Amino acid sequence: MDPTDANPDEQEGTDSASPAGAPEAVDEPAQRTTAAAVVADADDAAERHPEVIEQNPEALPDEPATATEPAKSKPKAKPKKPAGPDPAEIVRRIGRTNEQALAYVLNPDPKLSRLSRKAREALITEVPPVTAGALLGPEALARHFIASAAAGRYRDLFSLWDLFRARTEECKPVLAERQRALERARRSLSTAMKLGLKGRADRVAEDITRAQGLIWTWVREVVIGDLKAVGQRPAIAAALLQREPGLDIPLPATPDDRWLAEAAAAKQDGNLPPQLDTLLSGNIDRLPATVATLSQVQEQYPQRLEALVDRIDLESENIGALLAWARDHGMAGRVRSRIVAQVDAAAAKGRAEGLAVWQSWRDRGVDLDLPESLTAPTIEGLDLARPESADVIAVLVRAGAAVDPQRELEELAGQNRQLAEKAYESFVCAGLDVHLPMALEGNPIVRDGTRCPACQAWTWVRPGHERRCPRLKQEADAAS
Image 1 (spheres, one colour):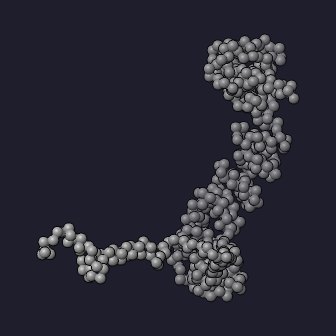
Image 2 (cartoon, helix red, strand yellow):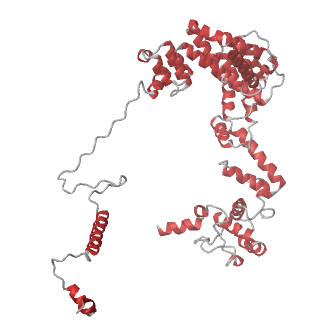
Image 3 (cartoon, one colour):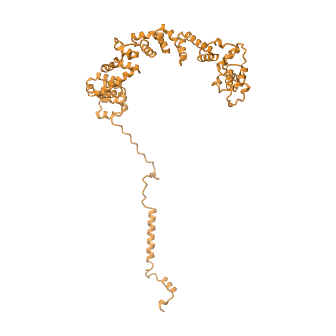
């Protein structure tokens, strides 16, 4: 039989049953495909599980699980000490004022003097300018004073002159090379003097007293050039006359209150020349009546004290201190007579006005009798809403006057419930035998819980009802 005529199924079976030793030419591609797949799977596994794992540089290192002792932390590095001395120590040794800097220049610290110039210059930005100038020496301090005065702080010229007198040789070259800066400083000084003649006279007086040498020449040139203005400021005139007693300064014929106050202050300090003292003593009673001026006049011009006491302002905010001074120095009667005259004048205008003034002095601790116009047995002209009116009514009731406080309250409540609330609270606190009017019961403007539990007065009409209410005190005493 021709092999080509064989059954295909039998041929397929014959092929599958070929012996093992036969060459497997047909299966080689399949084997190569399987090996390639194995290699690819191995590469994928290697990528999923790499043998060498790179650590994340931002991840924290894990602590070793097998460590028996904790890892010792590295000691912290100590901060390096700055080269050279501490700036705060420099400021403490030298100081930060002109006077301290001058004292250091005259007696320098040996330890700081041994510092190199490089070390000193490294410190000048860390310390105040005047301290840096003193650290660098007299020449640097002189340059600082000149620059500071030229910038407007003219009083540094006084320190510059003190330094010049103490260290003349070191300062001469500095002054010679900084003439323009000195001229600017002189203009600052002149401007300050001219402004002080109309403003801060005390500062100008201090400058006149302190200035020396060339600086005094500059100051004198300004003040001598306007002696009329100097005469209007007794503090400046006194300081100038202390230095030049023979100077003729025009003084005002009728000094104003400011002149008198300045002259009195200079007199208190003991620096008032005779010509100023004469003018002050002739007008001492025109001084503002304060505790200080009253004490000064009592000590130095006792014959003019009564005239000054009569000028006490009864409306002053310090009237309590003035009354105490008058009481302690035997002048209470003069002040009291003025107060009584004030109350009588107010009562002549109207009972309500007089009563208000009388009560205001009672609040200040002055015990005064009621004026005659207020003791009339009637309530006509009184403001029943005022607490002093209740006090007067209580006095009239105790004196037997035909006054019915309850009836007056009922009539007022029918006209104005707000005023009636105030009047009722005042009547209760004055000790009058009254009760809450019917028209005020259930008053819609009164909130719940704002009435006194003892007297039913509305506590909001006047602060402090709880301290004044006599009925509340009685209940508290009974409960205790």
